[in-house]
Length: 128
Image 1 (cartoon, rainbow, N blue to C red):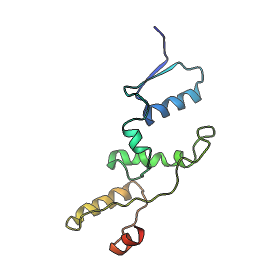
Image 2: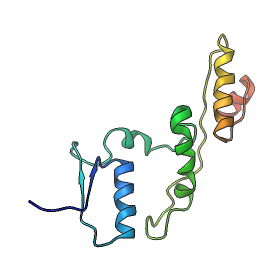
Image 3: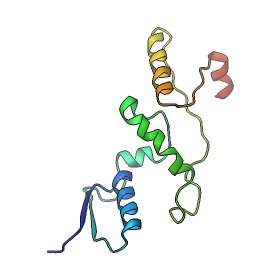
Image 4: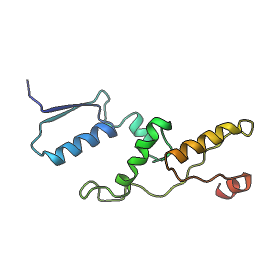
């Protein structure tokens, strides 16, 4: 049986990024990535990779999402020949009968230092 220095379970963005980073630091490292799917990045990564939303993940995950922003804006030399991100907007809609949920969402964004702007009906119509 082959011997490996490191085993990574999952070839999503976390597993693949970890493998890439480790191989940059130790090129001779014997590393194995185990993936259950027929291709890497199939489930959550595949859905998340199409759109970087700094607000993603709630209070536990969102700070990690924000922390990755700099990497996506300026990836390390040799990681990608083209830009990873392009500017896009996102619209979060809350029901008017539940104003507390909007305040909670804004508080969450402020806590995570996520830029946001409250839009009324006219502002939304102008964006859409």
